[in-house]
Image (cartoon, rainbow, N blue to C red; front, side):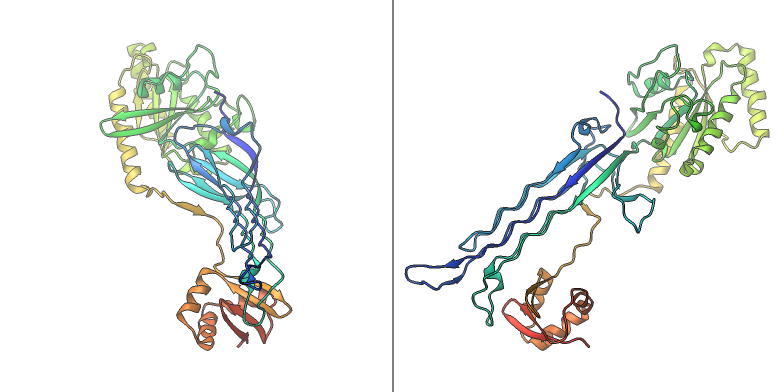
Length: 430
């Protein structure tokens, strides 16, 4: 399956249905009054984490996602059916960014949210609200309103999805250093290996199981000198180390100057602009010691390490292994598990199995009925009106909750009539 870790797509939430204008005309009640129902709400669009996915390949053939529209209201106070929601399944580690041009952002990208946990849901485009039918506008002043409210439009966005794989450990090395062989040895995966560079063309994941611990290991494509400037495969996959708590440098000990590989890796990381890499824990693995003579291995463990320490290398932990022969892997596995456990205790996130909403809905809505005559709705408003039957106390509570600013923004003037349920009163600013 092709590995896709970046994709552009558009989402369009459903529009709300229109309210209905209708009047009841029965045989025994020819003037029964307005009975137009409300429109249904438009469907919303969510992203949902799926731990079975590891790329955006399943989304690559669909660039537009549209949720269902709400159905218009009908007579006899029948509310229209809500539009169907859409859940777009994405791999864990997905970052959702807004690509629409917003003047206030300039060239900056707006991150709308991230998917980090299985079944986590992120509301990304809210469906439009259904319009009120004419029955909702009836009052003691206007018993037969001949108008209804139109449904609002659903939100529409152009999005960019980026994948930063969720891995505890990231393997970095020059081509043919033995990264793929090592991940196969540690996790019993079957990543392709071959006697030529760039065998690994995209990140590969494996699970290291040790006792009760399960640690995700990522094998990243090889980095060559000049990768930060586009040579080889460049650094397009390097963003996947952002979430890794441990970076393992894998060096080919059979080379004439194996420490040169470390200099290249650190230089390319520094020039990559990925600042998170500087603060991560790192260890060095000297691979392919099975190809060294006893004298060469002694020199590596002594003289080479001495040179690195003399250069004040910040990486103090070194492991000498043969991934192919599975030599000295036990001590390496113990160290990886120890570091992973420490980082888990420090940064253990609480699984958030709930809906994340980057928008903040207003719990009230002002609807113009006619000139200087408004209807105020919303669950918060309706709860207050039931609690305070006297208009004076109701207005006092509304002002305590900063409603004045909201009404001013919507051009409500002094002495305009406000209708809440069956209560009507003149609004006055302090």
